[in-house]
Length: 403
Image (cartoon, rainbow, N blue to C red; front, side, top):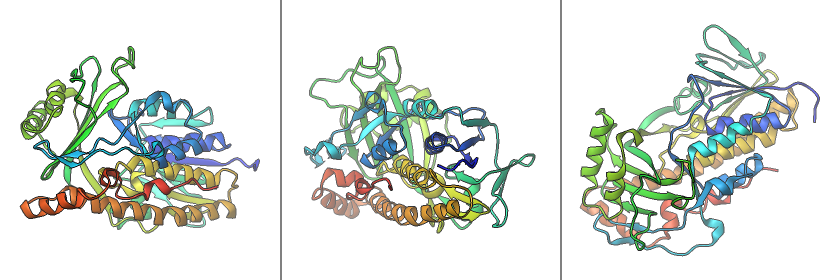
């Protein structure tokens, strides 16, 4: 490993940014994380991690303890709002089973893995980005300008770094809104033994997914175990207070099969996290740009925000982090680091484009409305594997971290 002091700036303190910062610091980089919020925090919801994300976590050195916070998610099939099966559950090899984790548990693991080479600066809003070749890359907030050998734009779908590297790529509505909530076990409904928690119900422009975060009582005094649910509806974000939004959800899903009614009845307004589903169109043509002794790269939603229907957003962010840190781990500033930035672009752009294409196809299927469109959708879904409904093929599972 080179003895040259290497400095990286990670813009954004989300899952992808923290994973990258920790992995870089463990390989000898001096890292500063810039977060615009007053503190680094995450939503009290959950994440689906497919095998590609698990492999990325292992490559990043973050898989220790994952078994303690992750719950395997077996295939539960897909039903119609009238309760009839659209796709029946089928047993699958254990290797293909995703897991679900509470975001706060994963966030804690990321924070614990940062080490003493990482400086956290909160309340820093990036307003300017310097990416011209011949100068050291830098970002500024209008007062301070911070230079580094490598800048990682992990600042989300409204990324300022992306606006500089790929100004033609903008965030647009995907035509739907998602509500998420975690019901802690002490408040979660006790369901009959023959009523599974895990399940997916798909209607005309509406979708409801529920999963268990561990077993009842397994979280002890922690409130992070429980039941996680996601409701998706076509349309724009609702401006009403959370209590009114919850009442709307209870009305929209009133006749849907159990346990949806029970879960919504146990939900409190403070549990709700509403999010407009947005995506980048077009995808950035470049995920990396060389500048000075290194360059700038895009990571996570800043690079490839997409609808959540395949559960691949966080998984791809972890892939990004594992790929980038693998490429620059032993790399010195100068031509080697510039070459690593170019390699990141070559590896990530085709991979992301393939997953996003599949996500958009599934998004179009799930948003089907109208009698004829729904009949076509149901006929198509009933002939394919339940895992293809969520994953749209095996593309996501084939990824391996670069050597």
